[in-house]
Image (cartoon, rainbow, N blue to C red; front, side):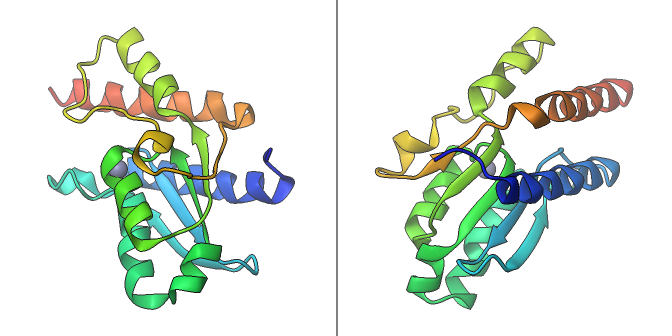
Length: 164
Ligand code: ZN
């Protein structure tokens, strides 16, 4: 399934959330959980700047869904996010039984940018969602949002390097 105009609208909101996260001292990632009827149920931003590197927005969506939605509601919900889920967040999504994944940027794109900029490897393997969640329905990337996300990640690196 390709990205619809509605998908792009939700992903653009995720990019705004990522920008806010960056401005607040965190990593530029933002996510939305959208119900089967199209209602936005939850917005989350990355909060790693405080030192807890598990504060990913995609994980927060799954934790929230586990206590606020029925199994049927979870299965009908879509997780939108600026960057493909890491294995931790993919696993959480799979464990709580959320539905479709929609990502603006794939992990292999982001890893490529980080390598290009001389950044070190992640402490966790950047496995594709499909390797962590069998049968996952994953849509993306969104080429329309690539330049903007690349700029946000570049800005994060410039900030961290300036802070030494
Ligand atoms: Zn994650």
